Length: 308
Image 1 (cartoon, helix red, strand yellow):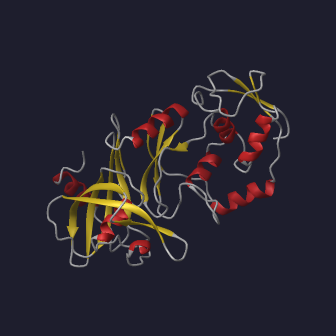
Image 2: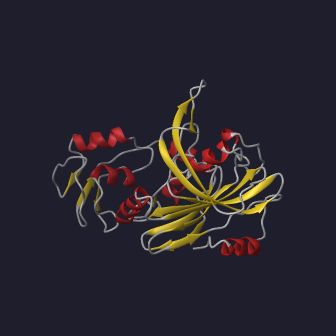
Image 3: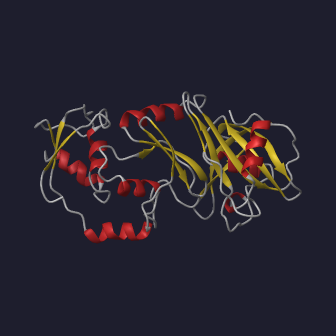
């Protein structure tokens, strides 16, 4: 941006801290340190006055954003990396988009990769008054439903729901190694903690740490693999992956937790999210030999009363 910009805070943006507001308003490549410097040196003004970075903005506030420049080559590299800014929207509600995140696409960019859900949202909704923001995360290799807030107020509401583990329902489908011997719904109880490995990386393990609870219902069982429905009661890091692997039924494709490699990747899919007044579903699209006829799957889920 080559000149001073004056921006009026919209209803969707109201309630944010100034720093958050600016980070969502300016280019992704502008570092947080630069934004902080703008505020500290008075280049950013709210209603013509100097303010602190964590003051909360109100609807109608006038924010002065100083001129800044970002290397055009860097922006072009991001676009080349992602190839497309398309995101698959499978549902909408007030202040909310529901995406179907594909396996292999991270929610946030990281070291060595810029393509991510947040990057695509930033580019696709560049002119939106509030950049759509994920309200929670899915592992990079997990596919399925991802809730995206389109206003700051809705983002705060969703964060509160996800902090209250009993306020919403999170349901997954997973293909695992081996024959699942339990016919009825089985409740899994564990404690999960983070453990360091010799290579400097970390993984989650059972045996100590935070309580992890989930319910597992078999939907289709063969001698070599089983299709399971998993309902989470807690939301620990890698919880489903760790709990199933610890029972010698790792998720197919989850090589981090002892699963066999699979060309389709890890076969774990977040298929249903239940909010207090809203329900969103999206069944997986797996290829042979893991594809399941949609009518059969829907009928089986109803039979086990897993559609509610």
